[in-house]
Image 1 (tube, rainbow, N blue to C red):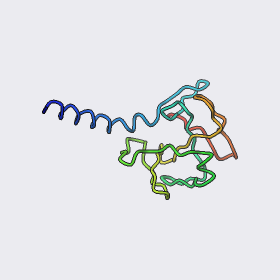
Image 2: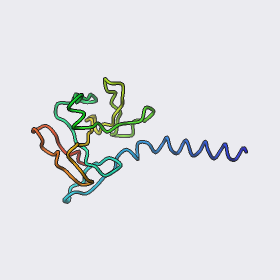
Image 3: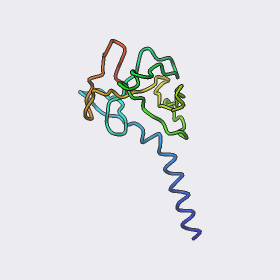
Image 4: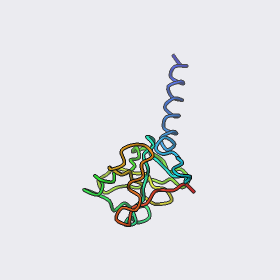
Length: 125
C-alpha cells in the first residue's frame, strides 16, 4: 500500500511540474520558429496589452481566446502568469499575454498575424 501512495504522489508531482511545459510548444512555420498552444494553434500578442496585464476582454477575448493557465501554474523562465480581471489566469511570454485566434482553424494557421495592425505571432527567440 505504501508503494502505491508513493507512486501516486510522484505521479501528481510530475503532473504539476508539467503544466507549464504542456501549455505551449515551439513550431516552425515557413522557416520561422513560433510558439503555439499544446494543440499546435498559433499564439499571438496584442499591442494594446501592457507588460503582465491583459486588455483583451469580452468580444476581444471571444475572438482572441487567452492561453489559459491552470490556477496552480507556476512561472517558468520567460513564461509568466497573468491574473485576468475575470479571475482566470493566462500565460505570458516575456511579459506579453498570449492568445489564439478564432479564425485559425488548424494547427499552423497564422491568419491572425497583423490583424488590425495590433496582433502579432509570438515568435520564439
